[in-house]
Length: 179
Image (cartoon, rainbow, N blue to C red):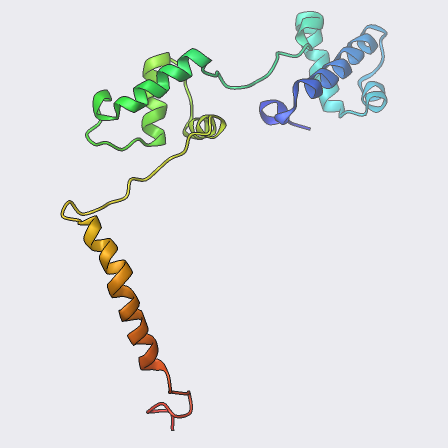
């Protein structure tokens, strides 16, 4: 069975799989056949063949775990610096407007720290840090919040009430056109 990027295994899961590979090495040394090893360890023959080839080429080190396949991560100091740079805004980093996008942040991380993140990795980084994306509310420059509040509290209830009273008294049978 093939596991992309370590199959999402935890460190404990990778340790279990490594123990199985090392048991296979012991059986290689005792001269057992691939089919017997695969049956005893409950793995595919193809995996055993691959392990045997790696064992022949590099010895026991060829079948040992290479560690977590995780992406490079930014350290606490780098994250603090990233946060400060984000506060300066996109204009300070050469973009034409004041919108941070995941692609721009990914590019900024690469420029500052020489670490390659994908857009998805950048999103995961933000979620882990409890940062959120926020779309600024678009409001007219001429907007008068006081006037809006007065309209909402005084005018809108009157408009809503007049709309309700206009529809009262009609039923589906007595409305004009439904005769």
